Length: 369
Ligand SMILES: Nc1ncnc2c1ncn2[C@@H]1O[C@H](COP(=O)(O)OS(=O)(=O)O)[C@@H](OP(=O)(O)O)[C@H]1O
Image 1: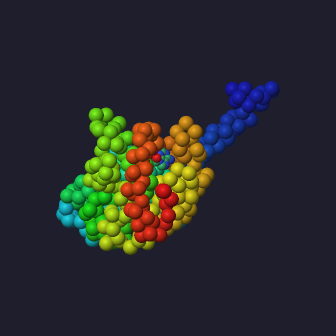
Image 2: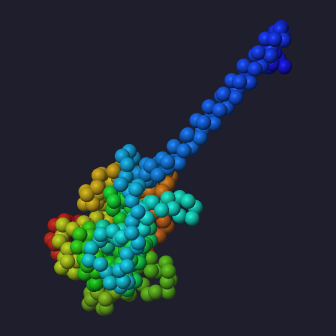
Image 3: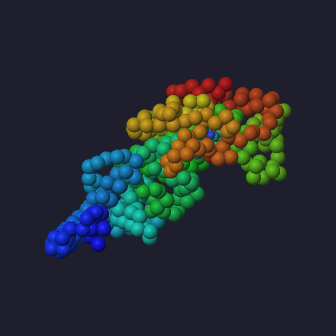
């Protein structure tokens, strides 16, 4: 049989066959023994090195391919913070963290720590805040909450622990961010954010206040088709040119008025203004300045964007979670309702002094005239 296996044409003498069979069986047994020993050692090494293997994974998930061991790998944090709800802490130091690389139900490691945001996009509504958030979160050093937490306006009573629990886990090198555009016009927001951390970096996306108001109105109209006309809502007395400053859509655009409240708590250098117009015409340029302001490397460049002709806006070639191109949703970049050009002129006149004062205060001309 061995002859057949080995393909010999002429069978060898029987004594030789026996000897060969003996040697063949012996070598097979040795091979099996060596293999078993090697496999066993390998398994042992793997199980010892698992922690380290995870550490390397941690670094990759953070988006940075760092090969040195992370100090996180061997750390286990104490129990969660016992701060009472509704009593915001005075600093943004990370909460006494749960395990840094604990596992979830599926056994996947949960990486990093939930931290309070170090940078917040505080406004303005319809300025282009979603675009800035979606663009900046492509950066490996930034992690952000997708939804608007509305902590400093609607949910403040829930306390900082609740707020922190909404945040994504981050590595120490990463910046946590959120965006809630209504903060900019919330009187208490500057003080509350200051109380959380006086070092919080603030980003305000501003846009021509007339266009912003129309955008705002277009959005409301899409939800409540029965509201009065834009022209009707804009004025207390149209023939006298009395603009209704109590209407939110108008009030939000009086940027300098709201900015005063922020400047009582934060120096101007801690507030970065993004031009909503340039964000559309030159997203890479605007995002370059945002990255500089955040003190992170200029990773997001023009290579990340393409102009989508159908959408009529710049879109991302890939996102934080996908390698596929993505534009913002349907509610971003909507066709605005047609407004009487005379009303637009009246509103432009109304906003002019506010705009000029705003340019002077921030030291930038946004060219809205
Ligand atoms: N890249 C890109 N794609 C789509 N839309 C873009 C983009 N960049 C800026 N914008 C402008 O963002 C406007 C919506 O602003 P916000 O995201 O701040 O709106 S919201 O306050 O969160 O509802 C939205 O306003 P409308 O055009 O009125 O819909 C857009 O003009």
